[in-house]
Length: 623
Ligand code: ADP
Ligand code: MG
Image (cartoon, rainbow, N blue to C red; front, side, top):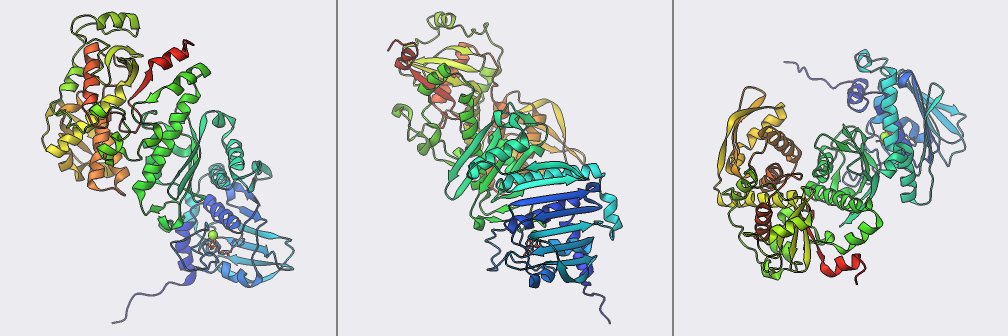
């Protein structure tokens, strides 16, 4: 019997490939501009008509194309960018050799170019895969590629195009992101005779040029409301600018990420950014940023997406940890920037608990207790105590109980009086490393005195760490106190979220979170861990689902569980803005002393800082 399988004609193969590479005019701009950048262009001019549908021209002053290479440019899988055939060592933006072939199969394509060493230019035409032989052309330098009537031969595609206005906005956005990646190159975009974008290089050196370029693109508002990011770890570098937590948007559209200059939209990186800002920004808000990750090409696979928008890291968790700690470091530094000089002098005398910033490990969760405690000055309580079982929920009960008496105000004198009243320990007692609480500030910080040291505790960060360590203990012991919800909460979810959650149901049950599927797009929550107190089960489930999806690409079960614990801890923790009684404050301090890692919250920030009496006195000029 005769076979029915046939090899597809070349023209059809190209058109199929075009479906992946060329989605809309903006993707044509991306491919052509990337080619110009690969050819070392210093100036790139883009001209479009009718949102790029009628005509789209990219003119560059790069190296040009030699006559003998012209025909090959439009041949599929023909490229000048893989000289050593090494797919794991890609330094150019292009390498698949299919952009021009694809574009030529769905439009009228003209390539005019003069190679830098040639004495004349040449022109090649392709009309829907019909190639005409090169003819001499008057072009003086570089390469000019024009694409007319995009998709005219693929009516189905034409229907999917948006209005010329949206296509032109997409082109502008595309070009802006490329312009950020290459601040030493000038870019212009002219639409129907009007200049839409004109960014020229300025400043000396890459960092200067980048700062200037970011200001050109985001405006000076961004410069004022952002901080510089600069971090190096092993062979990785992260640099760029990121907005202060007060400067944010409703979507991630203003987040630009580059890996070795290549603009990418990567979910894992987006997740790392969200994690870095998690305790300073609401979950549904997004910082504005442009971040450049430089990494050895061998550690990242860029050949996983036809338009190369996604990447795969060889060690995703290492990259994630690096980005989170680099951003947190920047955010930490930015926090002191806003304070005035006097305050800064005071701050410079304050020390984060026992954990100087540079010692904060990238992934505190996986670090051993002793590694973190190694630098502590409190040898007396450095020993890795077994945390007193937090599983009994005592601490949480304490915080969830309505205050017995009116809580103290921030006024120190009032609290001081109280400290001498019955039941409250003496502030001069030195056997408590974190001292004795004397009051609460802004309903967020606990002020304590230990001998002649003043201690300021971030109550939310500290409690979060306690709950987190408690959850880890539960995981290790396998026993957990649960509480049934008063009414079973139904949480509606997307299919992917649902699958991710249901896939980990047994692990959640071990932690005391019991839920089951409820109809096609929801789960019903039956019980939550007692430790979490009155945490909102709906938000908890949603956050956990997000977390799981983010981690789906990498991470061992153990890491995922720790992440889950961390998310749960955040939900179960006593919030900033909650008024505490003195006994509650002292209970928290005593718990901290008995809990491993309690000097930093789950995000690696210190949970308390301390200031010596001499430093306080210096502030007032007494010394
Ligand atoms: P790729 O960029 O993946 O190699 P393309 O189809 O985009 O594939 O381009 C094919 C080849 O044409 C490139 O490898 C390059 O040698 C050449 N080329 C394309 N555009 C330019 C340009 N603007 N300047 C110089 N050479 C170019
Ligand atoms: Mg290319």
